[in-house]
Image 1: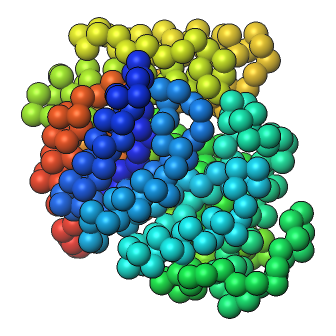
Image 2: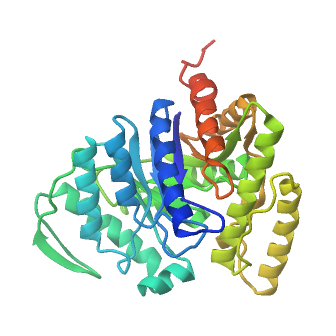
Length: 375
């Protein structure tokens, strides 16, 4: 199994000073992740989602981290691909440049950036996001593979060359953010890896793995975006690990509550998130808030899944190292290729994030690096 971390750059009650600090805190966590044996870091790309995600220029963040590290892979989780956000040739150029500077450590995930807030900021039509994301993936893969290429579709490009050429051949691995079954099927049919939200718990991850596997088995290759096929399945794992398991659970569910409220706010129009006190019953509050959100969405005739009511499930790796090991064992049995740890949540103090990374590096990850005994 592989182990990674994902960064949103979340923060409560943002000010310019606190915003700057949280971004530097994310860099510190990423550098420690390499030291502790993590395989990869992922950075999101979101725009104008105050509190939820202040990671708007992930290519710069990843370049800064790559310069501070030697071996850990640096992944876009994800690049917003619809054309209004950025031209596909610029995506290919920036990722290739980072691949050169990092010595071939780049991974590129694609996303739609489909919140109303983000699409309005960039003049993107929500109904175009799915088709343009797929077309952008095809353009980027072709631009990397071919010394000179041209494209004539929704966009008219070239002929010309993307320079520099990436180090990885034929190109860096491609992924897609998958929060719904349709996007899992799309990723499998396109021949790219799946980055799966795991907030709804291991049973939901199992169901999503099944959907992905069924799509892998039934595809005929006609929709592959590249000659390079990537069937990697990465699942989110919210986690806080401390020697004091009760405090880890309180801080983890508090952070998840902030995350859940943020998603409900930006994706479903719920009130803005709040921080709350550390000693509240956040797990109980999450259950109550989930029922209220489902009822409100039902009244407004809004499907629940797009605002990810699964974020209210608290059965995750919150506790001591033994709790985290048991959770990873469940994910391994499901067939997860990569455990994508979510540690940096808006209310989690920096020292707790760093200690969680140390606990994973010294007590959890080593358990899954050893060869599995056979009968």
